[in-house]
Image 1: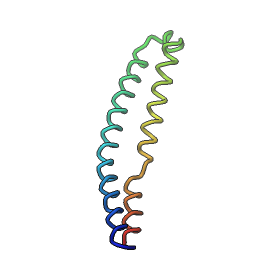
Image 2 (image 1 turned 30 degrees about the vertical axis):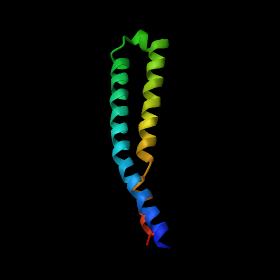
Image 3 (image 1 turned 45 degrees about the vertical axis):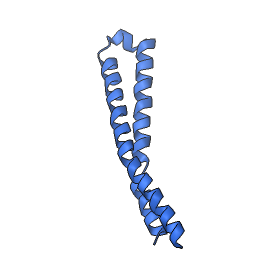
Length: 88
């Protein structure tokens, strides 16, 4: 690999490293919103939980949980390892 491509890989690795912190921040914010919505649902009377409001709240909790899970499954460390290998 030539010097230019190694430099490009190094720049990309720096950008991914910066993304790691941003992903963590976004994940924490999503968890906060999910937890608040879950608490809202849990504090509803049971009759409301079974109704449209409850169904919407539970659907939101499920969607937010999926978003958190997908963020966690994005393995930026693994990607950085591949870039390191490529730049050797």
